[in-house]
Length: 247
Image (tube, rainbow, N blue to C red; front, side):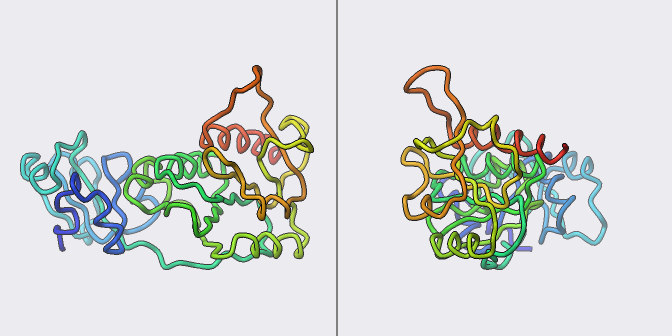
């Protein structure tokens, strides 16, 4: 058990990621991780570890809260962390039926984590990220996802436009969430798309990706100039798609 992977997280917050490890922080995130996978090890205070009822075979280390704070470089609100190897990268297949969520150039870790959390909660566990999107396994993304990332199937589209071309060639319905002239209001979406695409903060979906859509869909705003954070917009869209799936 190498605790050095957690050393000085305040000054080097992505140290675990660069070492090929993902970290779940806090009792709720660790519990969510444990429901999906067996981590490499868990470290925390005696009370936190006892509350999790860890399997005897799982490597764990009990540390006083002060020692935990000294190790990671700050005082954790919930003094327990679990560490796991990041899953091997898998290239996304274009011929798979959905619903699937495609993240196009979303660079903010917190947004990525929030989107993953929402997607899993609303039943969309097949998540594709392109080369310009921040990894869902970076520490801040894992933390914001509350450990839900370990319940998602993450695959990668190294060539976003090529992946979109493949989806259309395979007859998949690709719905771009974007404010365009041809976009229909979200409430008029009557089919469950195979691929739902959300784009980068500010600029939206890249033009070379946008042109491979089956349809565009937008969330109507009550006032000109208004917009939603990409994570909030994704939550609204996926809630609507979930209602369509239950019909």
